[in-house]
Length: 187
Image (cartoon, rainbow, N blue to C red):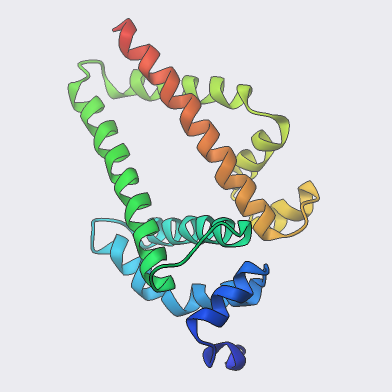
C-alpha cells in the first residue's frame, strides 16, 4: 500500500495534515471511508455514481472548511464527513422528489417540459462567467476528467478544478431555481 505512513496516522495527525493542505492525507481519507460513505447513498436509493459524486462533494466541503482554519472538529472525521454526505444526499433526494412531483403535477407533455428545462438551463448558463461556463460544459457535456479540465483551463491542480466545478454548479443551481420559481408564477 502506498500510504503506509498514513495508515499508522491517527485522526489528529490526518486532520492536521489536511489543514496544512496535504492532498495525500485527503486521498488517504477518500480511500479509507469510500465504502462507508458511498454505502449511505446506495442504501438510500442512490446509484454508485451518485454516491461517488456526493462523497467527492462532501470531501471538497470538508477540505475547504479544514484548510480555511475555521473548522474545530468535535467528532471523528468520519462522523463529520458522514453528516456532510447525509445533508448533501438529503438535498439531492429533495430535489429529485420536487422534480418528479413537478412532472406529475404538470399536465403538459414531458417533451415540452424537457425543452423548457433545457431552455432555462441554457439561459442560466449564459449568466455564468466564462470560466464557469467552460468548466461545466467540459465536465457535463464533453465528459472531460478534472485533470484535463485543470490542464485546459490552466488551474493549479485537479482540486482547484473540482472546487471550481462545485461552486459553478452551485451557482447554476441557484440561477435555475430562481428561474423555475418565476416560471411557477406564470402558470
